[in-house]
Amino acid sequence: MNRETEGAAGAGRVPLRQIFVSFARVGAVLFGGGYAMLPLLEREVVGRRGWCTHAEMADYYAMAQLVPGVVAVNTSMLLGHRLRGFWGTVAATGGVVLVPFFVLLGYASAVGRLAGSAVLADAMAGLRPAVAGLMLGVAFTMVRRGWGGLLGRSLPLAVTLAVLGFGAGAVQVLACGVAAGLLWQAAAVWRGRGAVPAAAAEGEGER
Image (tube, rainbow, N blue to C red; front, side, top):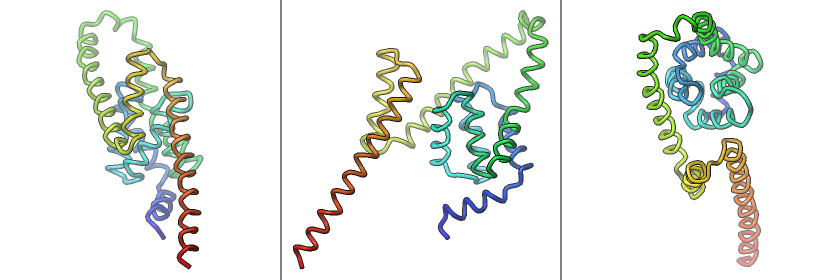
């Protein structure tokens, strides 16, 4: 049994209660939205629980952005499905939205009274740069892990140029990224198929 099989088998035995509690821990401190949640989710899922690797986490995070919805919830759904299928998805999603739901409900009911609060304004003023720092850390981590090969080096630079220089939107960037990855994989497969007949021909020539 290889390591991937062992990991899948171990993931199947994770109790639903543990999945719910772990994702509720993340949701309770999920300030800044989905783009700031990656280090928090990685610390719980990868570092504390060992349910997947950092590379797999980056893949789930990328897949979560290909469908509509909140990135944090989409990523949690994918991870929950990996661990326990449908009910794992329910447990992970319920956990990650539980605390934010009640906090937002309470905030919405008191927003009229808190709108002019100096304490709240000061708290938000301190929270914004902290969230920006989290997002910058996420960007650095993702680039560092994907900075390998020609595609890994050229694509982030091309995306940065498209967004900052030409005002490209998220949909266009994601669509181009998917297309680039598929074309790169197709080229790799084509090169691999070409290498096999060449090696076989050399073997026949030696005979």
